[in-house]
Image (tube, rainbow, N blue to C red):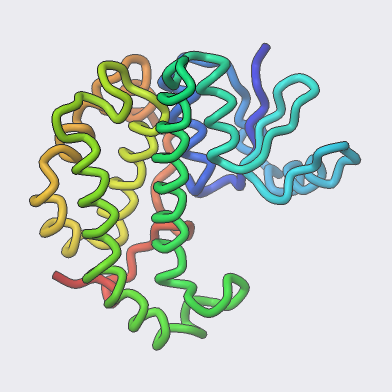
Length: 234
């Protein structure tokens, strides 16, 4: 059975965390909103369908009769169904815990450029964004990455000897932060050698490496991780 993945076309966004797991696991899926033109309209139509458990927002995964929303929830499902997480309860919960912490970091990264309201343009909240960015660069980036670096010390992957979906998500978080805050990340990542090692290890995963080098991988842009030079700093 091929899964149906639904997410906004044109940006990697939160849907990319799910794509990385599907691609690395060699799992068959259709990226429905990217199949042809009119993806947004098709997505909105599907979201409006009458369902017992409708998603609040994309990304969501349709797996037969199941409709699974929320990035971490989708990854929890894929981890159990396809061996992308440890099989023991402690390991499964640990990987899920790390994924939820990554989700916290993603929210904070987004709220740097939209600190007042998501429905307002960045230009309408730029003074607040500049203030938020200063704290995010100085305190939050090193706190998150320092934690992730620490939990990898002495281990090849988050859960030990085999990669999990949390490792893939860490990779995407690092890539996104480097896109949005290249100057600050140059300083912070130099102090996190385990994250640098993990990043290169994820790039080498088969068959994920084929996806990463293909034109199917959407570039960062007007999504969660945005390159506003005025929000960056050493």
